[in-house]
Image (cartoon, rainbow, N blue to C red; front, side, top):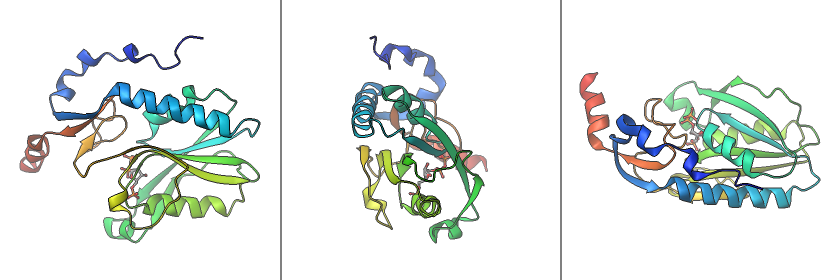
Length: 201
Ligand code: PRP
């Protein structure tokens, strides 16, 4: 079978304007691809015959979910949630508003919650509590990017991609003011990008 995630599918030269905002590539597209393939392989092994349901929370998870899905070689189903913060203060207290709920029931299902990034852990803690009430057969977490130093609440993680440094990073789903999610790598944003934005306000 051919490679499910060919690296040359990405046109790096086409990211001109976006890539100009990047000071340094911290995790390359090739490194991400290898890690996603490894995680997909582990999930395919661990969930054989369990008909798992992958759940993602929009929007940052989209690139990871799309690649992970194609790296998994067993039957899976897919669903999404969306959340919004009431306010920064409310979020700091672990309160988020459910903007979009699942379309599938999860009772008795083996659920794998897929996240692009865990920072404080507050969002995921809220969502996991919400999902546990629905009595899934199992509920575990798969995250691509982690910031363990920022954690305010402990979240058990079954599959993890990379620890991120404490810098303003974008790409592969991670955004700055809604942009840069489409970069196939993770890079550090140039200081002038956010400096310019502050000056323009
Ligand atoms: C990110 C990520 C998690 C949350 C993690 O979403 O997808 O949902 O932040 O942060 P926490 O661990 O501190 O709670 P974000 O709010 O950036 O939205 P997005 O996915 O639409 O970019």
